[in-house]
Length: 182
Image (cartoon, rainbow, N blue to C red; front, side, top):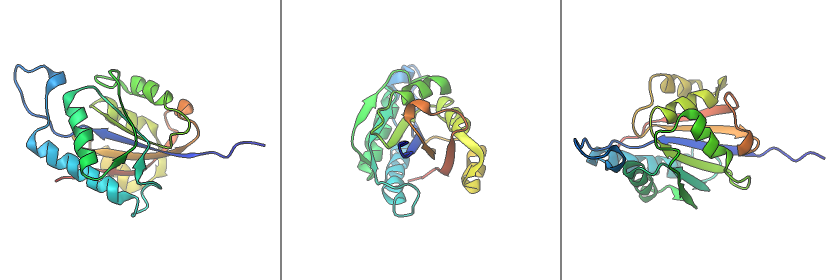
């Protein structure tokens, strides 16, 4: 007897707008006021998305986040905006990570986790979202919005069946792409 396949949800979030801080190390840049407003709007959108049927649970089982200050702050403000996150991990591979290294991080997610929020940077997050989404499978409106760019606070909602360790390009369907603004 084969095990039933499990529907998984992957939320790929590009950090919110960061301050322009000449002379400050990039890793230490904080959110700008607009970034704080936008991150809160993402949290509110995530809180409300389950009621709209975008994904099945209002709880994110695991957030995996870059170690940069702006991504940590983005995650904090998203949660303050209403997103329910059960557990969070910070991973240095996400900062400056290519799509391939971000996929390496996702392959390590335990099988009991059904919803993951990854908070990272461009170009890794946008490239990964585009690579994972199957052409013609998912929301055509979301795909059109994603094709126009992946700005700060952009959120791609992808679904797939199977194990995290087997996630590969072309394996997911794009459920939604939004850029909530505060």
